[in-house]
Image (cartoon, rainbow, N blue to C red; front, side, top):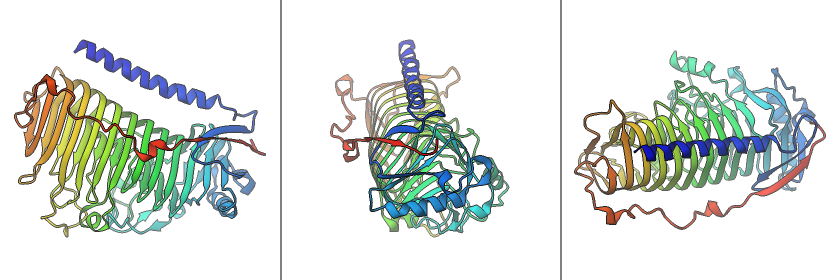
Length: 477
């Protein structure tokens, strides 16, 4: 166990060094206070580029730039069919309310640019609830538009040289705790019904609620993102792919008050009716700290289905659980064909957690006969240290979770661990090379089955997308 612990720490150090080196490399790029030339990697480069200051932007941290963003994007929309356009945000503090993006568009933040979310509610338009949810999460009515928002778009890039987007969420968290919100809190970045999306090389801070929320969208790359919010902040999930197809999330570092990555697809009868699953999702080289939530959560809103999720090289420290499945009677839908390998965990409440009694319904109209299907859940090559309980696996009576597979798993229990390291009800599966000994519902198949729970060898379509090198020279540094 000491050797495995050392491997865990070494793996963690390598991940952090890689993340820091990427940031340092990014900060050494050509953009800077003395240069107005820069380059970056993107799914597409743009034929036209302009600076926010060209449209009256003021980066003093006090002047509202909502109109400047709106005017700039409206003007740049003229180039959607002429090679696309880029809006460059220079160094400075740019206070702004919500604004909408356009197709064939790049929003680029200088390394010393900070977008500050306005605390004036008049700068946050209210829109309808998501159709797959039927209502807002904080309130039954509508929801405030996300800070950076777009719908029915194609070819959208939000990137930078590790520039910052600060949601200034404390204002919203206080309103939430005091139950003063008439509408659901905004997210930091949300793109709906869109295709070909890149969100990369940014620092995201203190979102009012979820930080990154692609929904009803496809062909998405989320890469090199640092997310930081207080671990006690409410619902500040990191990245939430929701009813999305063909997505890759990689090289991200997340500290949050909720799940670091939460995979979703709609809520109860609304999600069942909408019927849009999340599928073909790759999560790689994720580092997570979240003492009260999961590293990767599947659900609880999963009524449209979740399938073909592949997570590898995942590190979590001082986090409640590793990969958690959350569902309930009335959810319907399914979670199937989930593959996890090379997961390194340190100081956890549970290494594995599956919950069939999560509750939290959209309303009282859910169908009690809508039972979720949970099957084909595969974990292999997992090392964990200082864990209070190896696993809490709770299926649903007369609707067991099936096809659970664990291989080559070593869990080091904490000094004050639970007397019963495994709790298993209404589940079926097998194990091979798992320590401590699993519950009877997960019988050991012996060391010859150590290759069980194999990870799919073929690539997802999103893995074939290669980024181009884009170079620009701006008039304004």
